[in-house]
Length: 145
Image 1 (spheres, rainbow, N blue to C red):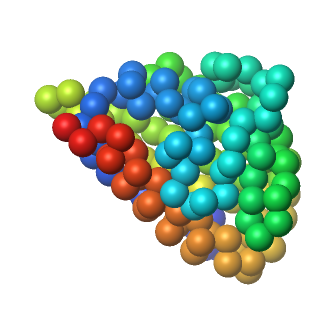
Image 2: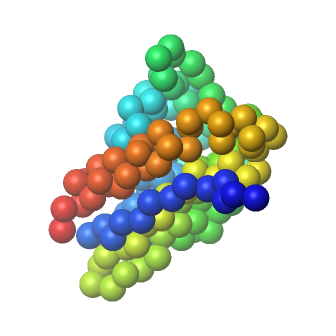
Image 3: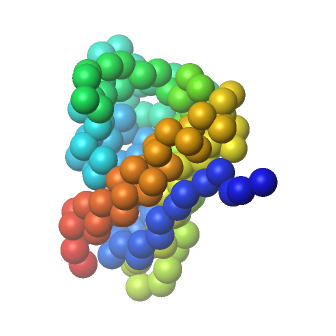
């Protein structure tokens, strides 16, 4: 069976704590999104995510839509992942890289999806990999070092 994950890695010139603060604040997700699909956090959601948090986002991929996410993995300043309605996940892993730098790994994981074969056939993994690369570049621009 093929791996049902695509990832990107970058070393960013800031601490894991500063990057994590962006990731746990849904209002900041549009700032770093390289896919162009994340528009804004939905009103009424948490200001800071934690394990089990549910948060909605306004999205646009062709047409505008709304999506609800649930935080399913969480380790302060090191790991956060949220799951969409279909079960696929977006995961962020942060590791100190010395001299105030952080290795960031962003992963789109559809191995946990209800219909992983359809996601694999849809072209989303390839588009999401391109979005991940752009997101990591945007993150680097926020912290140019």
